[in-house]
Length: 331
Image (tube, rainbow, N blue to C red):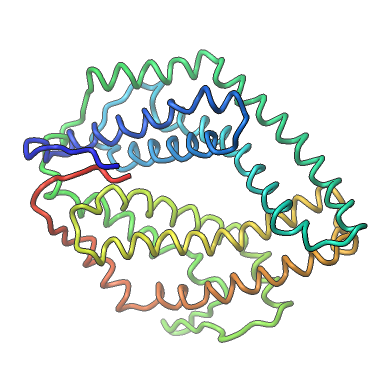
């Protein structure tokens, strides 16, 4: 869905207002359906809306002058509450639909024990969402955004033409991504040369992924921020830019596969203790295969993002917006 604007709106101020308005409305419109808890989708959509609203605030941080009750810290708290439940929903779907059908009788019973524990955790986390929606803090959050949208306040750079400063908004983001240490997991750097192993046996791969789990998780979060923020501006770049944005999402999903395996393993250990692999060996084998597959998909991406020519092309692409007019706020 695109929101049309005219030539007079080609400023940071007007584009920022459109983005905040769109994603705030999406964030709060699912509130009633989330509380009904009859379907998983409203909570997912509200979480996406909150994430994109937070991204809009980060993109236009130097443009917007928001009240304290509507700043990034408040949105982060809401995102964390929604995320805690959504993550459990995703975990439950994976266990029920992806793994359980392949298990035998005894292993299914063990997994059902895990699912019962998961449901109890979800109930507790969902109660936190109820409390959040009833809180004065949440009411102030909504009131503050509605008031700001009616009478917005901006920083000094708000009247600047968007196209004039668009590279300045995005290049720091790209630089931060390219300098992330997650790209160097399993790599050796000697005399300025990066050496990537062509293959790792299962033992060494698991060791690397266990030791570097937090680094890869942080890279995934950074990639998600890059994806969300670059999506705002697809109307101003050549088609190659959109291909890169889609690639950001694909990279995020591959890193997510690695993270999901780690999260699932940790959750199983928390319920069945550290020897859960002996209790559900079929599931353990499936996780191992998924981890190896995700790593194989990750390796060519890692090579690409460490390639100096690719990095230069990405920086150049972001530095050269093309379209002279403002057409839409991207989803």
